[in-house]
Image 1 (cartoon, one colour):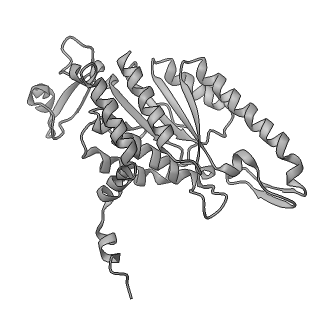
Image 2 (cartoon, rainbow, N blue to C red):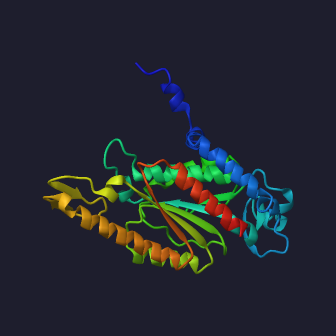
Image 3 (cartoon, helix red, strand yellow):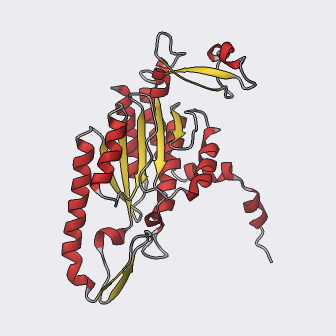
Length: 300
């Protein structure tokens, strides 16, 4: 026999799921609303139809757009109605991305959350905070135009679900306006050289970025004892049998620290930031720090 709430759960669509993700952080959302209220007059109050600014792109008219933004000449060429977006307006957007590679599926035990689940939770919770503050948000690599309003959250959820087959460990290069901001969620276990190439491609175009490294506690602590067989999660990885894994713990932790230091060195040279988050830690602190960081960047 089905549980009484099973049908209701089945009827709950992506909008309900996304709203639940945001509602799971009440204390953070209250604090984020206070931050948004503090900066709204200096940041969001400046939002206008980009008079005198450099043209960036045409995009389809969306609910909530002012009719003054419509470019009637461009719209007359085809059926959809288009609005004219300036580079200043597009630059006031945050473009989000999460790692979809197999290594993100790792969870050291059934009690831990998979890194992929935590990355998507962080992405959607941050999007909720930004949208509540009036920021324009988009999902990198999907062709989505930056938009604001609570209706954007289910759209982000839907695009994440559709993008589940994207197994790239770093985002592909995408042309963004100068001074746009990106936030990437990944374990960043790929080589610092690969990260450097990707970050440099964006930074050279004037894009600002913030990286959140999501790790399982076992990846930091290596808590195993005795004989352990490690299996790689990427296609090129093999298997390694360690007879006394505790004997490698200190060396492993030292090597991981060197890797994180190398990642920090990469982002620092481009004035980007990198923070590490473990899946056994609550998400509120890293989300609050990230939101404050983004708010401070806009205020500057």
